[in-house]
Length: 293
Image 1 (cartoon, rainbow, N blue to C red):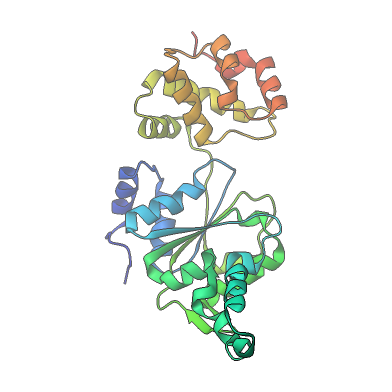
Image 2 (image 1 turned 90 degrees about the horizontal axis):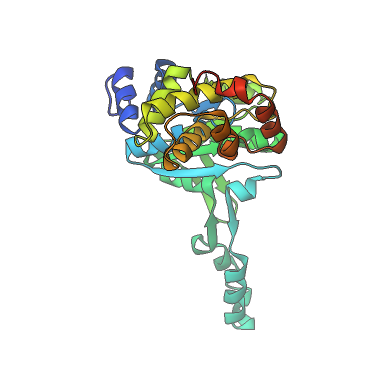
């Protein structure tokens, strides 16, 4: 039976819209199935297309705690799962009498000295949480294999305490910017969805939804300019977040239409690389297109 409080994909889609997240039917279907079938949802796509936001919005919709595990190069199991509060243990040891320190050494590894990291917190919270594993592609193969093991049972054995498992698993959203290929074993464990940059019309709608103070004209001018920027040979194609930032900046400045001079002056809102900005400036007429006409 579905664990979502919605009877259809269409109803979920409308609820997501109510949270200012405009998901197409494919993404809404993937979310609906992942939560209903207790399957992790793996979202891939370029940076800035709204992958991370899915986890945040889902937690809000379900009324659950969002537990975020931000992956990075070199992350290991202890940093994601748990560690011991060594400073507190040391204070406890010093407070013990020397003659009783050995007798009570096992007490130093009780639950009160355990520091939860995101994975253990998600296991303990179970169905009361949404676990967001963000940018898994930044982690190495060993950590990915460890994560797959956790996903298989949502349980972990801590030698000093014993087995800790979730009665019901949390909802899980895994994101990847695809800087490296994730292994097939992990993909088989998940439902998969690729999030692409939105169409022009949808991006205009997203800007108007997330920044209602921005005029329809500016939203359309900016969405068109960003689409043309993405077609250039830039090192980092701007995402939807940058589109919203640029539209907000222009609206704050009181700009009514995007022209070449204004575009040059405000490129820092949308492009965060010097070479990319130089490329955009050299093609500014193409970037602005008919916006100033």
